[in-house]
Amino acid sequence: MFRLIVLVVALTIFIPAHALAQADEGTEGPPEGEFGNWPFPGSVDELPDGMRPGQAYTGFPNNYRKNVDWMSIPSWLAGDWASKDLRIMKTYDHTNGTLKTIPSSTVAPFADHFGDQTDRQGTVWSCNFTPYITNLPLDQLTDSQLTIGMKPLEVREDGVALWQRVLHVLLTPNNAIHDSYTEERVTEFSPQGPGMTMAQITARFYNPAGDPIFTTNSMRIMRKVKQYQPLQQRNGINLPMSLSEYLQSTGRPELMFGNQ
Image (cartoon, rainbow, N blue to C red; front, side):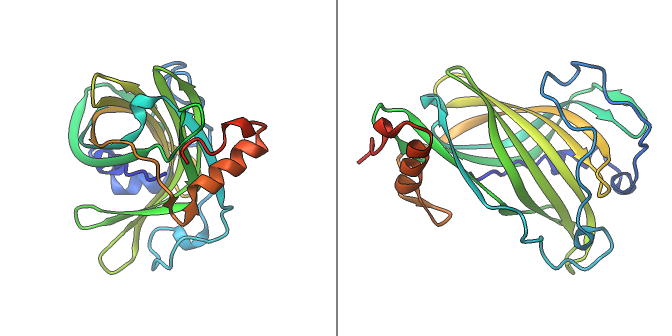
């Protein structure tokens, strides 16, 4: 699933360059419940040596396991979406234990796609595949992102919560690594009227050693830019065949071939 969430653009408001390289491992996390009920790990895996700041960038490692999964979605979420503004509601600094609660807004382009196939009962399904790379131009830098994990945490008729883990490498024009970090993100989508959806994003950012730096809560309003249509292929995946195999393997063969 294509994701273009540019939280790093907004976070440059708060994050000095050196902060991504160091963390106080003894600093406690934010107050319980301050950033919702989704659990975030206290630490994550260290980034590979080839992704550390100050080195020439040679590409992401290719040893992350390929995964193709499917999730059913409510009909209002199906389609292509776009947004350009991100509003950061609060930020917790793990390096000094401070909580910033003054909201701020920034231009941070976002595009999203939901819905790839329809089953026999009319339910829309989205294909989640990982890993995938997204390259985002920033001011004097490029944010190269490798999404290595994605799964639905909650799917209801009035809301969908999606988890992702993303590795970031910020590159200079001469392809040197300026900074790098891991992002763990939960996005909660909810309908806001015809053709509008709100995305509430809770994310935690970790330095190359895997220690937490910041936890943030932000939101954006998305507008539908393309209506849903079943697709035959995306990212080289035969979508009708893939969904059929998924439904067969999960004991729901009666739902197969609903869009043929």
